Amino acid sequence: MGTNVSLEDKFQAYVDAENKVEPKDWMPEKYRKTLIRQISQHAHSEIIGMQPEANWITRAPSLRAKLILLAKVQDEAGHGLYLYSAAETLGEPREKMIADLQSGKAKYSSIFNYPTPSWADMGTIGWLVDGAAIQNQVMLTRTSYGPYARAMVKICKEESFHQRQGYEVVMKLAQGTPEQKAMAQESLNRWWWPSLMMFGPSDDNSPNSEQSMKWKIKRKSNDTLRQEFVDKTVPQAEYLGLTIPDPDLKWNEERGHYDFGEINWAEFYDVIKGNGPCNKERIAHHVKAHEEGAWVREAANAYAKKQAARKEGDASAA
Amino acid sequence: MSESNWKLWEVFLRSKNGLSHKHVGSLHAADADMAIKNARDVYTRRSEGISIWVVPSEEITASSPDEKDPLFTPSDDKVYRHPTFYDIPDDVEHM
Image 1 (cartoon, rainbow over the protein chains, first blue to last red):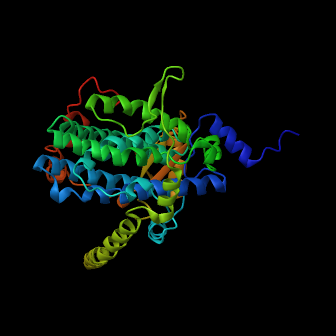
Image 2: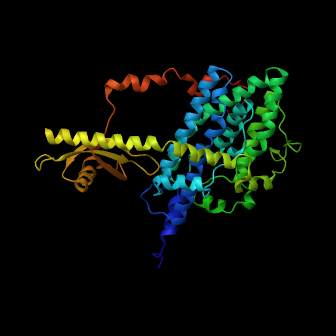
């Protein structure tokens, strides 16, 4: 009597008491699966996210801008690495995650399937896309899985530079010539809605959310995070004298939040399905880079073998 | 390793779930199991940890102090990697 507590119940009580789960702890299989899906998807987003920005490295308008952009893209590669490593603590091999990305089985944030035709996009991405990512990632520093939470702490520290450099780029344009200001506005027009989509489906259409919240993998719902982002970002746009492309956007005194228009969910699902402007290009480029890098991996293996053989030779000679 | 001279092991402790393992010291042991047991006795007598890692010291590759400059000075002149490098007006909040 009363001793028949299932492992799942024990796990839930453990998580409810705000304890962190570590790699060798017992966890429900679905908790493990959910984390592998979420963390690898997060890692893929960092890696694929390098592409739209790398597009401007060789055409940055100044050496200063180029150095900053290089440093930022380099950070994204690092973030991808922290996250792949966190997923590997759950027993998922790195090669499998890469294969799933390339086959289309695994997803990444749909925002990176939009093109970056303008320099202003480098600013808007830092400001809005990294801003939205920060909103989500700050929450994830308190996620119940220890290695994921620790990776997020590191990432959030670095993201702050990303968002501020982005805002600086947009600010320079917004305070520049009328043409420059128009560039900033045009870029905001294209990125606003896809940025809101980054938080995922609305709460009543988000099948995995409830369980994730219960396990404290997530601590805030998609709609809550989206609202927080809108509330923070609207005054930032006002400061720049830029207009957010949403006629329904207005302050709601009663709620203490901004009201905003309906997201085009048909577009959201279409891009996830693979029909965004750049889906095919992004994966094709990833595959190409991976294949073209094969000789580096082979050379590294050959060198390591040679070094090991030399060491052995030295040891037996001694 | 000879039978009279046991291997050296580096000991890492996790003080509580949610924190990473931290290096606390080293000890000698004949094998990994003994290293864990010895680490328990030597390093966790006052509930310092809830998880122990032991790693043979010889398996750790460390950077050489001579390499300090070539490894770490390149980041000194990359101040633009820090958020404070960017002038964001005080009126703009949450950034």
